[in-house]
Length: 285
Image (cartoon, rainbow, N blue to C red; front, side, top):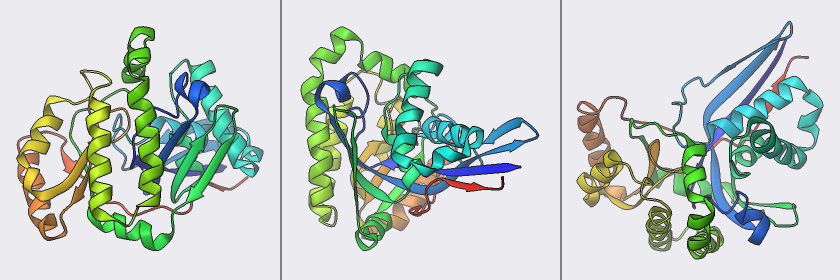
């Protein structure tokens, strides 16, 4: 029996620039963090079963990329030896075989773990710049992850954004989001700067398509406005999770407010997390 597990991720900056055609046209950059919510796959007697465990489906946490990394390694364990090549293989699998538009950042976080600034260059190379554990833990204490109860399908939102006419009009916004990722990496421990950049990212992301912010998301950020410094949707938006950068003195108030809202909104809940530094893991042969 072979068991493979991998963490999902929160994208601290926005994605988009890690997906083609933008990535192949200009190169992309993302700052993200693997978190200790894991997916797994078990290959036993030729039968592969996968599980999300505690991860909500269609949550905007990069679940599909993590699951497909698990699937490929369970099917061919030798792939785990070259992690950068595995990132590329998952991208090919998703886009060329499954036919689902996707980028590189989800499986990158799942495979390596930790908090990293990624450059996905147009020549096909991938560069990783880790954030120190001290800085990562500081951010983790300020961040709260909320599942809104609205489920999305990332590939659907990606298709809408990258439609030819729409994509050409949105190149500036995506370029700026990739620049913000690098600025976040440099100023990761600067709370006011991080809040400013997260808010700018969400503002830019919402211009990509009218379905980026669901009604539940809009209501949530409005009700809790006094409790956070910044907020944005994870992944492709349109439902799923939101990441809040909380005012330290308001964290308990914010959590209490979410619990009250959850009584009215089916599925809404806080997803407690820590940073996962293990990345993808293979056991058994």
